[in-house]
Image 1 (cartoon, one colour):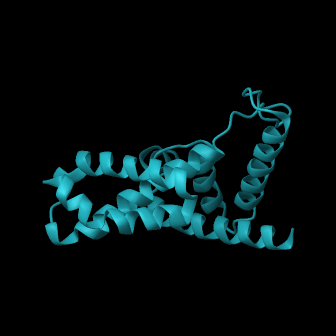
Image 2: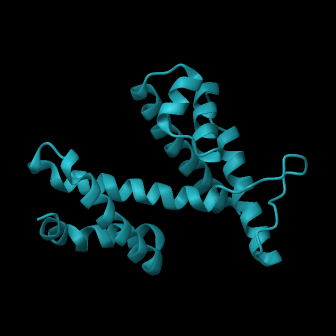
Image 3: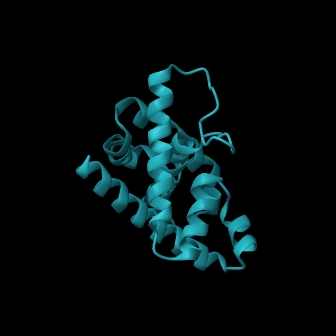
Length: 163
């Protein structure tokens, strides 16, 4: 049953993912969304909410994809990316991405917002760990993450337009 439901929205989800990451990655993410949907289908209480449910799964997979792009192992002393077997040009681009992310997190206006963003995007911590670490409710963590996403996105766009 879940496969038939997924097929109804597959084209819309695919278009959404491709618009964010391109064709090949979009196809890979679509497969991940399909698998996650099958796993999470029992959690869906209101069957009329299937489309928002699917798009939330797509956004979750998209965030995982983007985080995997930014989550690098940094040398604590030098701030350089440890050798991951990539060529120098790729390493340079990765360092630029990491520096951009760090700069945009530092530019966030509120200390708690910065801490949430650091824990989430630099250290990959889940909501529950952030909640415990900063003594916040889950709803507060979600709101801070949403604000951080907006602030970081605006900052990245502004810096890329200037460059």
